[in-house]
Image (tube, rainbow, N blue to C red; front, side, top):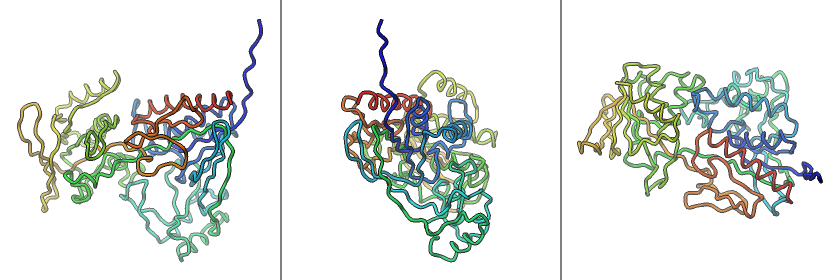
Length: 425
């Protein structure tokens, strides 16, 4: 019997996006012997998962899953991480791509010990994108406690100001380098996996739901940050107008999803996210009344269905089948009245609550910013994989709406596809 010889591990893989899908793809490929370049536009890895309070299936905090992945990356010399970086151009064909990457300055070098003296010296306050504007960062900041790379960032907004000088003077380790400039890297790789992720649909575009008009209407991702121990309120769920502990909350499902004027598709995660967030409220405020307005409650899989059944047993959670038509605010109390028609009874409901959470849909980042490569998109902006042509593949929420478990499974498959491109070239 003749023993077949497999092709040697050769060539490199580029993974674009350092969220959970990108991390999984990079690690699966690197741990079987391939060199991987992991490019992330933010100053940290972790993507949307890093912003959550808890995630399914175990309802554990992001540290649970991210910490081990960061350790695996740190221990694996085959993974080269480039944060604050974006792909500018892709030329070539499967097995031989020339990629131009722009690396933006962090203004902090490897000498950083995360002592925090730079942040203490800063007098600037800049809105935190990580916390959806609900918190201010100093001019020098650590994105979050477990951020990887574990280094502070100096905001570009303070460069050239007196605050930047104060930040630099406060550093005892010569870690602050205000002369850093953007640079361009050119890489040759055999395959590319696009793990560019998703963004919450802009709730301000949904005119009838009051986001941006009324302070006590927030989005589901804002709720995650409120509930998170490292969030703007240190885990206290309080309403924005007066910091009151809410005695009643309404969750409005399909806020922008399944709507031809916004996102025509189901965003997959929103129903389970709201049911999960109902448990956040219940843990903190056992007597609070929770109203969930929905078109259909979609709980894919046996485990999610059991979670839903448990929620239904709670006498303070009211599940109402009805699409919210409008909202209004009492100017004195800042309470919000949600108007919907109960699809079961035909009754028109006017439910007044102290706070509203919009389950905004999942939109691929490629819906608003196309990538500089020869890719195919569907009408909603998701990347369509061309397995016959090969070479470039989309994974996770760049390809379709998905939860963390599905994203991880899909990312493992795309790592294999990327490797096959190298082996078969």
